[in-house]
Structure formats: C-alpha cells, structure tokens
Image 1 (tube, rainbow, N blue to C red):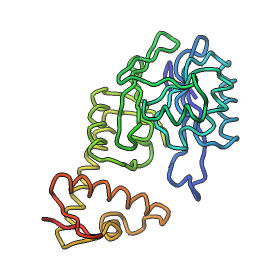
Image 2 (tube, rainbow, N blue to C red; image 1 turned 90 degrees about the vertical axis):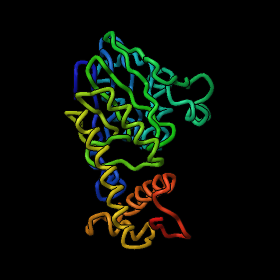
Image 3 (cartoon, helix red, strand yellow; image 1 turned 120 degrees about the vertical axis):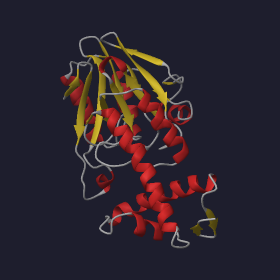
Image 4 (cartoon, rainbow, N blue to C red; image 1 turned 90 degrees about the horizontal axis):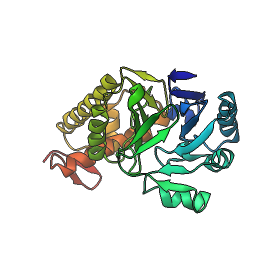
Length: 275
C-alpha cells in the first residue's frame, strides 16, 4: 500500500477477540524513501514468524531496495519482535532512543545498533529525511519521526488510529503532544490502527481528550474518595470490554499521578481524594 510519494506500508490484521483487542485496526509496518533507490523501515511488529514473513514478502514486492536502517519507535515487544530476522535479511543498522540501545545491542550484538540523537535527521532515498523527535510519555524511550517532505508524522504508540493510547507518564506525554503539534502534519501514520488524515486536528483532539478525562476524574473525586478501580467504573462506559479494563485502570492511574504531582489530589492508602 502506498500512502504518499515516499511512504509505503504493509498492514497486519490482528485477532480482535484476543490480544489484538488492544490494537483496533491492526498494525502497520512502514517503508520510507524511494523503492528504486534506498529506504528505511519503521518498527518490526510482533515476534511471530508469520509477521516477519509478511514484512519480508512486502519488502520483495517493493523490489528489495537497499535498507539504510530500521528505525524503532519504542521498545515494547510488539514493535521490536522479529527484529533480529529483519536486521539479518536487510543487513542494516537499527536506530533507536539511547535508553533502548543497551537492550537491543544485547539482543542483536555489538555494532548492530546505533543511538539516535534528539532531532537528528535520518536520510533515506528520494532525497528526503526523517527527523527523530524524542517523545516520552507512552514509554520513556519513545521516538516519533517527522517526514516534512510529505507532511507525514510517524507516531508509534503516542497517537493511534482507532483508539486512545496508554500512557506511562502523563506530564511527559502532554509535552510530547505539543512537540508533535508543532510539526503540523497532514497525515499521521500510527503504529496501530487506520492511517490518520487531518493529522494536526487529531493531535489537538488527543490533547482535548486528555484534558476532558482529567476533568471527569476530578468530578468523580468531588463525590468523595475513590480507588483506581472505582474510578474506571465512574469514568469509562459501563459496557467497556473486560479485557480493556486493566488498560483503562492504567490510564486513570497516570492521570491521578499527574494530579497528585500538581497538588490537586491526595493519596491515602489505596484511595484518592480532593485536598
């Protein structure tokens, strides 16, 4: 599938009745550059052999261009699975956030992994480059990639195509959304879910969504102390899938952590309340 002049992708379908429920709309693996010249790959997906085979089959469809590097958005298993097999086949370095480099070097061996620098320009074919943007929040080693030539932003898991993202550190996450908004992308290519048109509008929606969720939590606390689990029932829809409740609880927890840091809530035992 060709998305823009320099962006190509293979879409991997996931079972929505199992762990795929965490990734509505499946997963995309991106090839960026010029198939007749040189390209980079963004992420490697799950470790399943069937996934690696699909990626390599698509690579062959593109004409097996020279791959100058495999760029990693972050170190979660569904983004670095099968990386050893792809790196061997494509015979190229893996580029990642400095915090992720030790783990990937341990897995792949010395001289296979090269640390990215903040805002580094990574060149590829078609006379275009991607800028590496350090965007912690979903994970501390998260990197987004901006392709200014096509007005495309590769968002990893910071922004998803068919759902909101889980967040480890909300303060960092909100700052990362601001960095992404400054890129003013027309298109966002997420790690999971549909390709997003009107990308700048979607980033703004994410910012407003988080602020709205924070307001909902404060409203729930206005009626008295609650636990994280009780907050999920008060804030999320009653028909929320059981296999999504843990993710919802983690999101609530990140909001409460942020609010506690800001002095807007207090924590006593397992409950949270307004000061």
